[in-house]
Amino acid sequence: MEALSQSFNQTLESLTGHPTPAHILYANLDTSKLTYAEQLWVQWYQYWGNPVIATGVMSFLLHEIVYFGRSIPWMIIDAMPSMRKYKLQPNYVPTLADQWRCTRLVLLSHFTVELPQIWSFHPICEYFGMTTHEVPFPSWTKMVWQIALFFVFEDAFHYWAHRTMHFGPLYKHIHKLHHEYVAPFGLAAEYAHPLEVLVLGMGTIGGPFLLCAFTKDLHILTVYIWVILRLFQAVDAHSGYDFPISLHNWIPFWAGADHHDYHHMAFLGCYSTSFRWWDHFLGTDRGYQRVRAKQKAQKLRAEADELDKYAASLKIQRE
Image 1: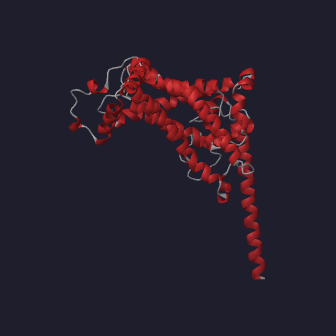
Image 2: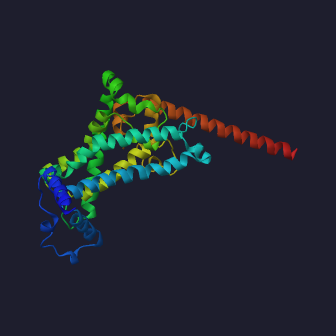
Image 3: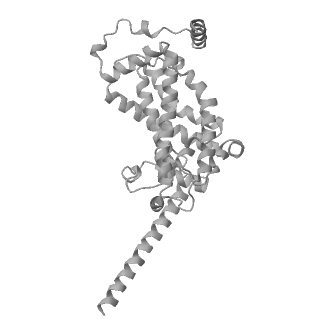
């Protein structure tokens, strides 16, 4: 058994390039001066011993837990008839068969496309000078402005890459799969061709790598928080629901499900992810604006009709 364990460890070390073991990395560290979260971070790397494996496992688990964890509430909402009034395309509700089919393809993509990338994530981070196992963590103010930059970069990258994906052959052979669901739902955020997952994923990790390449000042924890927020944004944008508390009702330039749902319904326009400004200034949201204006007018007319009926009923009662 011991020989088998030794052989397994040697195989892992050969696959991960014989990195410096965690017990050496933290040899002179005084953990008493660390926060509880920082101590847990150190314990995680010490538990795995090999920092490449520790980062890889953490990255993969983070992605799976957040992606499917954020999708579950939308699955519950889809099963609640009382929520239909908030659904952007109320005539379509995903079936269990849709959910299961989507889950299988997403998991296949995660294990065949994303897992190898995640496995090589630590060495790439080290190459660009990103802080990984080190503590203490950066200040929250630094993380805020860095994540804000990632949002802006990813949104610009996604707009142009996504718009390019709608070019004839690229749409037919790659992007069409993602448009299989005209009315999207949360799990469908990463329901896409492996090449599309690879290309659009570059917008998510490209910003951090570029910032790190120029500044040499970025902690992987900041990247993890960014990835969590990006996954929330992607799943929510595909949810198919628009609530009064939805973020775009508070931040006018936020895209959200209201914006992206139109893209799935019309197949063209509204190419951005997080923000509306690229579509607005380049005119690729004109169809969206017309449709939403028409829907708003219809809603106002319906409300006016209801008021007229109510006033008429009161008049009859008085007479």
